[in-house]
Image 1 (cartoon, rainbow, N blue to C red):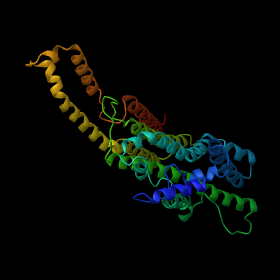
Image 2 (cartoon, one colour; image 1 turned 180 degrees about the horizontal axis):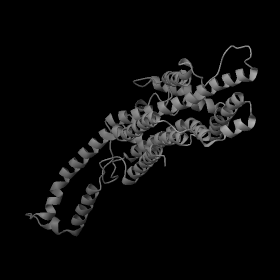
Image 3 (cartoon, rainbow, N blue to C red; image 1 turned 90 degrees about the horizontal axis):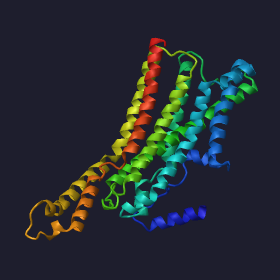
Image 4 (tube, helix red, strand yellow; image 1 turned 180 degrees about the vertical axis):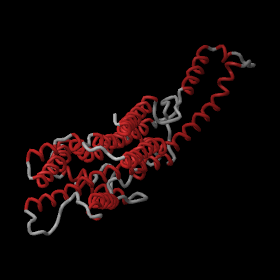
Length: 372
């Protein structure tokens, strides 16, 4: 693996620009899971759901209540299980997004003048360690601050840690384990955010490149449909994360206040709007290019269509059935040219995903407001 990596870097030095990472290399969260040599999905479940989810909650509640049945009941509640599923999902999502990117690599490279190098230039930075660490530090610092705001204001802290002589070894271990779990869960969450952002940025870079689009008579999407499918995959991961977060809120046993409903509800609505915009915005350049291609093809086709509908000094082409058939086929191909790099089915799936999450959120808010 190291030799292949070294060979890749040596090959890069002969090009116009040297890259220190490949889009296909693992993110930090993936490297953590892969270090245990387990099947990746199993590793995500074991560490995300079981170790840093269920066992962490069980230990924390046992230290708090000193009752194993109470701790088991709390850790097995729907709210905590939803959070555990969110943690496992966060470890898996970066791998899923990168896999979808590599499934489109061959199609994307064929459209770029620099081929493989152009693909790497567009999607460079996904596995870069420095920005991932920066994103991780921001997430970890934000959550540590959020979990200790009550303590700062004079109330109880979510993570209990002090130097009291009566602080038992189990309480000390529980505190350390909570901090480690929080650090690794935020590592997974930050990897999701960074991978999502990097691939979205790569789609923008790809859209601005001098593409060698396929002829409309070969592909009505001009070869760009894989990019639309990739954008849908990113949106699916994004809304899946929101859905699991929403599920953990919906299963909470406590009734939120009006301020919580307004604050959290507004935040989630904002995330939904951002997700929809992030689906369309990176594709706008391709949309304009596809419109221009369709307009140019229609203009070039005009003289051929004119020979069929107007009189000509040489009537043979208009009377030639084969010629009329070809013109008709070309007209059909032109009419079927897409102006977005996705079909109605993809747009329909995105609409269903976004509408489902929004409907659940609205129904929950109404139920809380009217005490239904």
